[in-house]
Amino acid sequence: MLDRRDDLTTSHPVDTPPSRSRSLGGLLKRAAERMPVPVMLAGAVCVALSSVFVPLTHVSTGTVTLFRSLLSMPFLIPMALSEARTAPVRPPHSRWRAYAAGVLLAGDILLWNQAIAGSGAGIATVIVNAQVVLVPLLGWIFLRERPTVAFAAVVPVMLAGVALAGGVVGGGSGKNPAQGAVFAAAAALCYAGFLFLLRQASDDDHIVVPVTESAAASGVVALVVGPFWHGLDLLPGWAAFGWLAAIALTGQVASYLLIASALPRLAASVGAALLLLQPVGSVLLGAVILGERPTVVQLGGCAIVLLALYLATLTARRSADSGAASRR
Image (cartoon, rainbow, N blue to C red; front, side):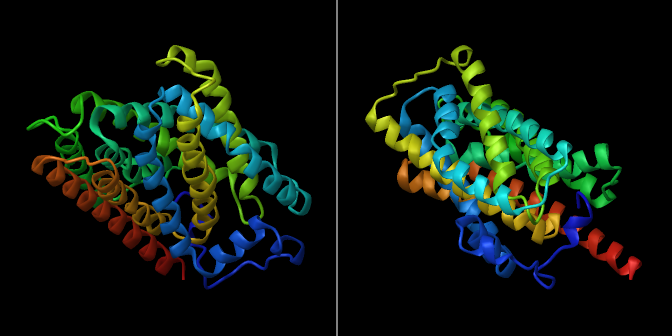
């Protein structure tokens, strides 16, 4: 939906150079070419899993954001260097888009982790996934892609579901569900901008490099903002360090490499629909691992959000199909 790359599907695979097929990045690209839907679903599961690990660290949100970026670098940098040696030269604007995406990613993580502390991992992730509606709005503003009337009609329903999921009505399962909902909504804005820019910075030949650049920018922002955002602990302890490493591997390395490799091979509406597995997975994993017990009203709000997001992606897909038919 964001540009012409949205029409790419597995019916037109991109040949992988032999020099890249032996690397992890090359293997990931080949897997995404053959099975983009499972790869996208795997990325969504990794994001959901990382959200459940955050409360187990018992450190500040700034600390989580910094170490999430820092601990991902030993894995991302070698793959990025390997990709850069074989891929064509990138235009400068792609690099700056990746850096800007990283700044927004830091804002998303800082706000999202704070939302998890207030309303719980599952509920916070449900609200953050309002990005599925926000990304098309960014396309409308910056790419002049006007949403359909049906899409606009879904937005108020989604906002009502967000209010219920956040515990505004009937209370919630978190320590401060209303405040958590506000932080999660702000994180959704940052997350939408991150996905929008990351897609613009990525292409068939550049998957790992944009993810690495955005992760580095995110770490720099955390280092600057962290001391003023509930503090920054550079020595969190071995127990916290283990959970932070798990967050870096699942939430930074695996998730965004999987998502970035699958996005160019799926229509935007299809990719957005698959990412709806994130909130569902977080609610289920939060209940199993953390013992979170959302209220009936919150679960109803989650259902409304998921239904609204599904309808939004459905209308977007129908619009894309009709546009393709008109071009044919």
